[in-house]
Length: 83
Image 1 (cartoon, helix red, strand yellow):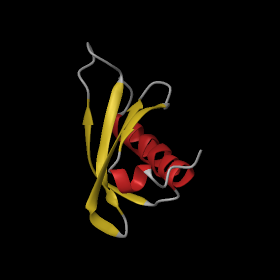
Image 2 (spheres, rainbow, N blue to C red):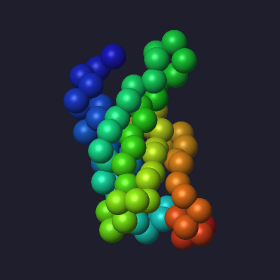
Image 3 (cartoon, rainbow, N blue to C red):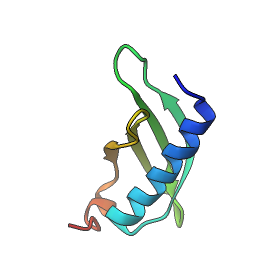
Image 4 (cartoon, one colour):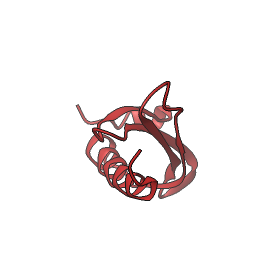
């Protein structure tokens, strides 16, 4: 696997942009976790919405292609999703 710090830095930028583009929301990532290599090539970033620390979010990003695989968001953010 390439340099983990570089992966986290790139994935964090992708994650921030995803939440801005999809939910018009700024987020702060506070933790990351690499999925086991034999299961996937994903890194999970978790954190919260910047103006609401109680609103937790998680995003899964493929660390080879840097494509967003999925995002876990609360209902109030789902209602704000851009089509």
